[in-house]
Length: 86
Image: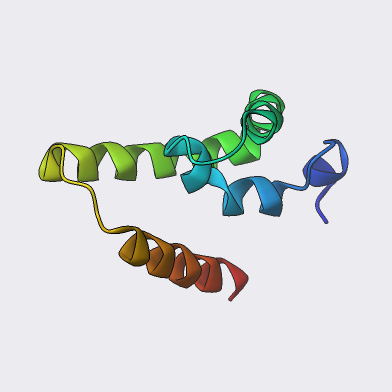
């Protein structure tokens, strides 16, 4: 655990693993507040979150209002989670 992680209530890896749920408004209100609070305090996660936000914005511009099927979104989340763990 880095010194930045030990300074926060919530572990950075947990926040980053849930960033897509946060971005898609697919987590509980309590979870959103917890992630938001962490992002306000952690510059490392904000930097990583900024990259995620840019990717999401790019996909949004390219795909318009199309929404991927929930099964595909879940498979992508699992794959991305596996990449983070590597």
